[in-house]
Amino acid sequence: MTGLKDTLALSIKRHRSQLCWLGAFIIFLFILPLFSGDYILYMVMRMAILCLLSYSVNLLLGNTGLLSFGQAGFYACGAYACGKVLLAGTSLLPGIIIGVAVAAIVAIILAFFCVRHTAIYFAMITLAFGMMIFSLAEKWVKFTGGDDGLIGIPRASLNFFYIFNIKMNTIPAYYYFVIVATLIAIYFIYRILHSPLGLIFQGIRDSETRVSFVGISVRKSRLICFTIAGIYAGLGGALFAPLEQTITPSTSHWITSTDPIIATLLGGMYSFSGPIVGSVVYFLLKDIIVRLTMNWMLILGTIIIILVLAFRGGVMGAFHAYISPRLK
Amino acid sequence: MSNFIFQALNGLSSAMFLWLVAAGLTVAFGVCGILNVAHGSLYMMGAYFAFTSFQILGLNFWLSLVFALIGAGIIGFLMERFFLRRIYDQPIEFQLILTFAFILVFDNLTKMIWGTMLIIPTMPSLFQGTIPIVGRPFPIYNLFIIFAGIAVALIIWVILNKTWWGMKLRAAASQREMANAIGINIPMLFTAAFVFAALLAAIGGALSTPIRVCDSGVGGAVIIQAFVVTVIGGLGSLKGAFVGALIIGVIGALCTLYVPFIELFVLYLIMAVVLIIRPQGLFGGER
Image (cartoon, rainbow over all chains, first blue to last red; front, side):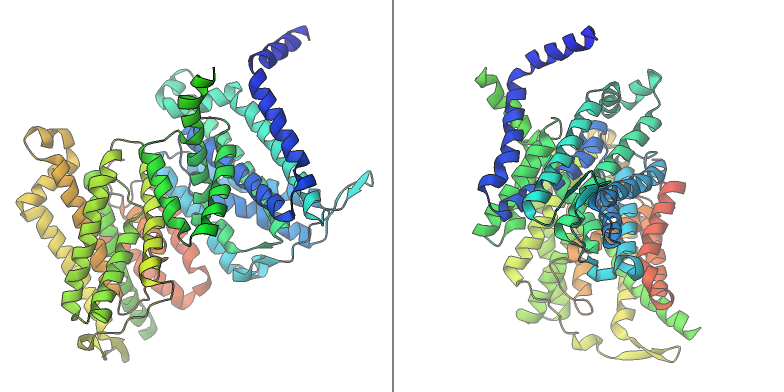
């Protein structure tokens, strides 16, 4: 027991300044509803959901070196499943859990086909599966509502066996739920990426052959990675459904899959906080640019081109390279 | 039965558009090794250029085709020279993301220049009218498309297999270093190959204007179909692109007739099944 205590003390000592920042950030998130309107809370929730989706993408891209064009498929699975369950009139938690579970099951099934491929073939097969889900969402009118999607999904209250019952119909209440869920999810992914499993993922990215020479099954590790990525996308979707209260097939379109890719690239795909920073920057940029000009896509496209050609590490990469050394 | 034949012919003409886009995608991938997500946008630019010169400048059909080719060629040249050249040796993820960014840029540029309205160009008088096939009126223009697609396929075959330039292209595609060593100017050749690919896309786009709408979202829609086609035929194989386009065009058209609800699903299912069973596609070589 003392061993654990010592390592914990050591790691707190080592990361003191980062922990301070993290603490301040979390406190800021929690006191935000006290002095801001619903619009800002809505934006932060969208950022949190995009952040989950970005972790889903970056688990594959930054950590295992696979670019998926199909994460929106799992996102939509989570959203539609959660929407269906909530429409049936349950409380919030079953909706979220079933949404995540459905995305996880779909991810496990598809993972078997996807993980055999790398590079272009991986991008193509995830694209194919994502678009299959899209066409189902669009055409299976009985279940998904077709083009109109699922409408009027209730933001059901959060109750747990009569122990507590919290109403979620106001934006601040749901805001706390989304933030807590996202923070827990980010904590878990932090633990995963800093575990031996996370090291294996990075090993696969850097050299597949060497990892398999050490006696680790690349296929199995990729399977796990793909499934976790699916779960994160599903969680994002499940949180998204009650927020928007409407889901349309476009949530599963491959264009939706590119948002988290862009966010990840913006934030930095090689640093842990990249997806968080990226999602925040993405929505801030979008909000500012859309107010100033109609040509949001032109500017976004230009930014991506500059990022890919010059700043591949994104905001966090630039921070670590240029700003962080000067602070010391 | 006549339904079947008629719809298959319709499928054949839409297959030719797929083929023209997929051919350019394949040339760029086979020679430069780049999977250009923005290739559909070059198709779209071709369509807009042709529309502009035909409808607004009032040039005739053939001249507007040339106009579209010149415009798209210049865009392809600029794209390759200033952007794509820098990332040839980078991981494929970055190529995909960079070229995706060009979709956003082109979509927005077309919105700025041509507005957000759907543009429905008119049919040139040369191709107005129909001819009866299996007792039904079949548009002359669709027939023209089928022949044009086959003609382009023949031209590509002749260029690649019978000309000195085509031989250099094939050399660069199979052994880049070796080709460089024997004095082929590889960077120059890559630029030319990419421009050639852009021209193929522009032909497709320009030919599509009389029967399809010009819309700023076309690029993204077209490229996905082209991906389906090239994956089925085998990435980097022109023969594969042609056969893949025929399969997808005809199956798509027949699905629209018999099972309209699952048309898209079937196409992506075929793509996924090919990737699972035979990732190199029907005509692709070793991965």
